[in-house]
Image (tube, rainbow over all chains, first blue to last red; front, side, top):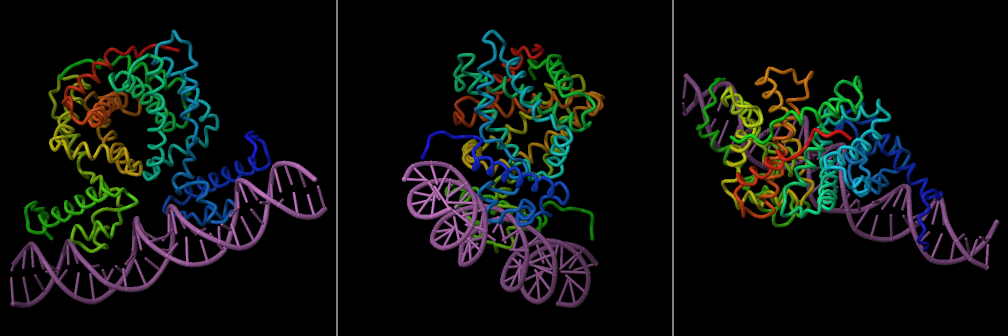
Length: 204
Length: 204
DNA sequence: ATGCGTTTTTGCACAAGATGCAGGAATCTC
DNA sequence: GAGATTCCTGCATCTTGTGCAAAAACGCAT
């Protein structure tokens, strides 16, 4: 048993390829025939594995379609903590999320289809929400660390993360709706501009 | 076939009672034994109906636990549109949501258990997210209407709703975490105060 | 290359979730 | 109370998801 996790070993490459194949098959079939019109059996066949193997890669059909990166949370955390110390929290969050989302939107055609698929199939929201929740938690703890605040005593970290993630989500949604007519960065600018223009402190 | 939907007919009352019984049974059992430790058969038995009947009330176990009100979205929409015309959008949203959440938190013990249950059982997020999504859409369209904005052209309605719902979510989470040490209204105040203190308009 | 320990894949059995259908029971209307 | 309508139930069936153990693939040392 060696400690070295050679990310390019034959085994590792093959596992990644299989995972990708299953995800691709799941996405393609569900996009074409809907969630309930696609069986795990069909996905497995298209991916070239036995049905039983499917469940050693993903715990459910929905998860196979969404394909959540298991250590994205850690990665975002690191990125955020590496932002310049002087930078204010919202800017740091914004830059962190922009970088991540930007990377995801490189294949813009796939990204649009993905977003629209999620809209068409509300059941996919389960996986998406779980993933989002995990990211928000990670970011809250990272922001609290950055600001030297106790996330139990203060609501500030939660609110900051909520705002930044929310703006991001709104921009991403819009971007998918108009299929990339504006760049994502532009839409994010717009969302943050709206935020700045909002009188949030008003009292009923 | 009469159009009148007599909400207090024998039939209607019985249906409501059955639905409530199923929900109660589901909540109680899942709270005690976990989602995967509770079968639909057990829920049905506790509620005094045949297993087959369960699925004519809820499409899944998770939905029975969450018990989403199917016309809450419409109701929130109406409430929001009935707010004074002069009131700014965030305040109107805040008041609308506060009223709704406040009503839900009347039975505070149940509400705390519910929130903690959702945390313990991530699978419940599916139903919660679907419900939330529906509410946000309804509110976006209502806000757009109020402001005379086109929600496709402007991001403002989306951002406003996102902020208000987000603050609400943060406050609710906190409220459940500390099991009602502060009132929900207080925590909502805190969340909005943090929002107001945030420099959201900064650029990277 | 051969053999050996480890990891991955697969098949099988099985419990639970979910849906369509049709007969029977309860309820409503008159 | 009779007839129409709606609801509840049992049955058959398909799918999802998991545990287990055998078989296949792989990595490594000789």
